[in-house]
Image (cartoon, helix red, strand yellow):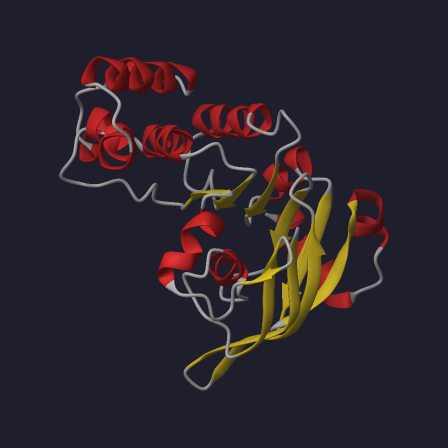
Length: 243
């Protein structure tokens, strides 16, 4: 369970998130909606304690992570698989080395076993032919699939966090990423997806949170989303529909 209790986060003089309160179970499928600059990605970084709130509490399974030391955060972060928009791969490592990184750094597995696991993961995400390629040689869709493989190599996360996973992808690669997200929600694993692609949100999520002006203006299911009388949400949805 993720809990935000009256969380405030400022960037300079701008208040990005103001008195944010919610709870999300690890099994839920949640889309965070809102225009650019409304704090959607900031929420993900706060969950991972990559950022620290100015006030309030963030609890992961009842543990307040707000003031934990880096060494104490490792077990918390292991519960999540985080995939950023750009894939965040190591530029100087091949695809194989990127996915093998965790095995080599944090396990004592023999090299043949590491290679076998890497190949299995790359096959699962559909990029096994890219084994010896560098990140710069990959398309955006391939980079994100390799990032998913690397996330799965690191741990068996209880929940995935996705930051604009299909942004700037062609329709075929976007569909592949959506299919992978759906497959990875098996075994009662949920996700939080930050996206401005409404098609992705509606196809994947079951709960929707809308941010505007540092506040949560809507938090509910699909049916309530389109019946909401929140004017800012209506404008947001109308603008997306107009696009």
